[in-house]
Length: 296
Image (cartoon, rainbow, N blue to C red; front, side, top):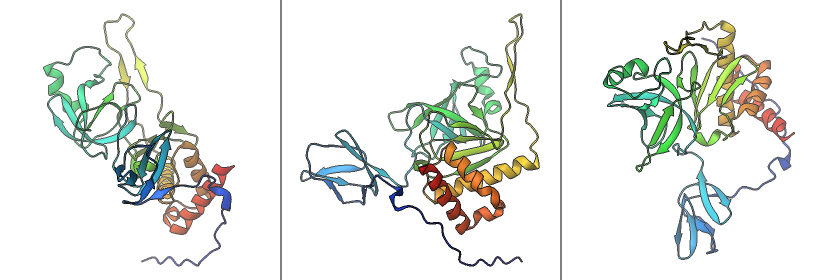
């Protein structure tokens, strides 16, 4: 049995002016404001002309609307969000997908691309072959198409960038730790592809090669997409494991995850071995370096 003995070391000092905007943090029952000119949003209620918080979190103001953004909560989907989920059930013309939301999300048969990219109405034959498209336990990337009346999400995978995920690792972090960006699909310079789902599911895989599309010139045969699994080298595995530990370190140190912060953490982690990235003092050291670089 190996024994790891660690001595206390000097911590890197962070400038006091690091957070220029003071945050208003509240707990359940705290009075946010007594001004009646504000409208109540999520996480608040009005009592005796006072706006009171119902959850612990950070107060956000948008014009006259006040809401409380909780620190840890289930994923509240919005239309257009990119999510990573796992198929839990194959039903009648639909799949149920676990996306860390309050209810299982739904992926309709009419919301997926047929093999070969055919554009036609779904038939009973397609319904019988649903498990050939997605089976229980498969990981997929999708986009939120709409929200049902009960709050469950309707997903779609009509774009070629969405679909079944293969040969990678899944990391789960709080959804509030994922920064909303213009794109959530990133081909990093270190040689890996990262899908940062708005629901807190992060998928890390080897760099995705451009899918080859073959189309018959006569127009008689539908296009065929070559998605043959590629061989993962030991260097790719090392990169994926290092990125995974960097994602966990950023999340535990409360740093928003996006492509820039992840690359800063990856570059800072190169002076450590992959297993050393699991040590608390190493995580803190990397987080301090990322914070300082984001301020510059």
